Image (tube, rainbow, N blue to C red):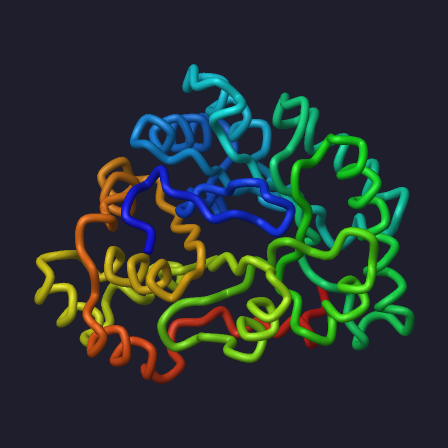
Length: 283
């Protein structure tokens, strides 16, 4: 059980990853990214998640630098975007990401979305070529851990047979969207699951069931969602640019949801999801 913001999960290669990450999806670049990342680090977060396609890596890097916190105390994740798949393009994308963030290495690098059969006849080969580049960067020490995002079991299978299998899978996960088959596969193969959009881009916050449970614990619906994910053994990546909510989202370690409430949340019907299916997306 994670009881402190400084607690961490241990990845398959022994590397530690802080148990709560600060997400930056939809955070504008420039001063907003700088200020919000700096605020998250001041609050106590030590895990920052970004991606090339977010268009905010420059601001995120500036926020990290402005915090004054030593680099080795901050876990930084980024992702290679779909248009940069393949061996050589991935190497180029990584170099740009590192330059934009103004960092010497990444703690975690992910394939943002799997190539799928709908778009590519040789989709599995394309994923493996992207992975080959990431494995090379990992072996060179430029990345401390490598993984994927939005991969289903059938996307993962061939990567599991490679020299360095994925250590992380970041998927959409929140009340009403459990992706049980994918989570089960990852657990069976020692892949840590991270939860993107743990608040359903804010849609969880107005749900009557979640708010009723929140009232019981004198908490917010956001805190209930984040705590529920942690107690399920997953790593949540909440995002906010509002200072008070950045702080609120980190205050989830001084209470525990009881078994009945965990089940109630786990049994909720689908609502508030993105609707994105990795097998069907065309971007």
